[in-house]
Amino acid sequence: MLPLNQDCPDGEACIDDPDGDGFICVLDASDGMAPEGTPCEYANVCDPGLICVDPALYPSPACALEEGCCAPFCDLNLGDDDCQGLSVGDAVCVAYHEPGSAPSGFENVGVCGAA
Image (cartoon, rainbow, N blue to C red):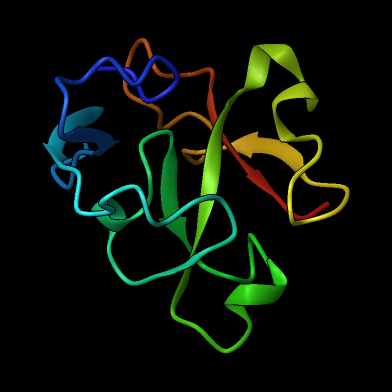
């Protein structure tokens, strides 16, 4: 599964594998009600294509004082184009994994974050 493609079956979302082996499909608990910039507590409560991250990384105004914020995945190979027009102004595509720690095949997976 690749979060950039969101190629999971209907009713599921692609999130990072807690075992560190890439990404997995899990129940989409968003019910279509958690778009970009929405507060969140768990990885699968954001709409598909988004992931719950620390608001320090994705400081959308709606996420102030919240545990997490729904941020879009992005493709590092495309630069910052995937991160334009979002609730976080000047968002850029940053690596989802620490340098050198991305599972094979996922080196281009990023998440939009504050510049």
